[in-house]
Image 1 (cartoon, rainbow, N blue to C red):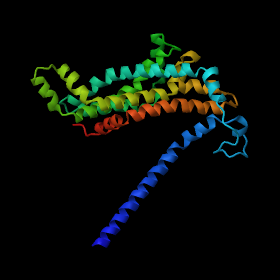
Image 2 (cartoon, rainbow, N blue to C red; image 1 turned 60 degrees about the vertical axis):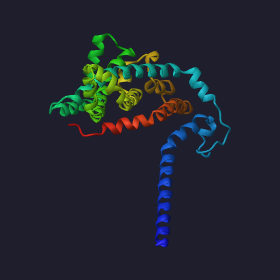
Image 3 (cartoon, rainbow, N blue to C red; image 1 turned 45 degrees about the vertical axis):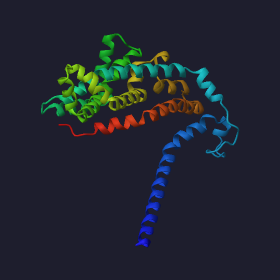
Image 4 (spheres, one colour; image 1 turned 90 degrees about the horizontal axis):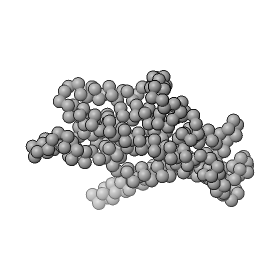
Length: 288
């Protein structure tokens, strides 16, 4: 019996070692492109373009000249600011529209409520190239051609459907009896939603905020089609147009932009990671 227990303990230790080794290997592989970008961003030209040099090491001393060029001689700061305020505006519009819609669909006592939520989610799967022409007519009718505000109008067509579906699932996981008890205590339906349902839905709301901002920041087609002037561009379109000209590529500055954008996003994402995961897992429920 002691020998059997010792053998079982050894197998458990080996299993834990293998799991940790696989996790570390996956982390290193996942971080590989980012580490490559960090290395490339501070390499000298003669070090980067010489095929005889080791690409995973500094053969010459690192330099910050390419980061300085990105910061001082391109419109990187303008692109970053445009991305930030456009993303914040789209997130606000998405929350304003998707939160009550998700709550209403989750609380409807109708057999078609779940099907309606599915139809709304299917709108998110429509390719942007299909919606491009009608959205172009809409932007022209509003007089927002070549304006960053055009993206604030267009991007909710991507973020609202998926956010409604996500929040519908999350509100369905919140017990209906909690709101009914609040109404018994004298709250109106809106007050029960405001003071009871919303605080319980914070993880889902955080998930919507992160997902909506990421969708806006990574979108390329609409940002290219609706904004042409440099002062209104966002990072996804501004950086390539500033740092790629014909056959001339400013590789180090391009990779420096990747690092400068990815680091704050990674920090914020890790701060909100627990609520983000809780929001997605709580939304993964079967709707009645």
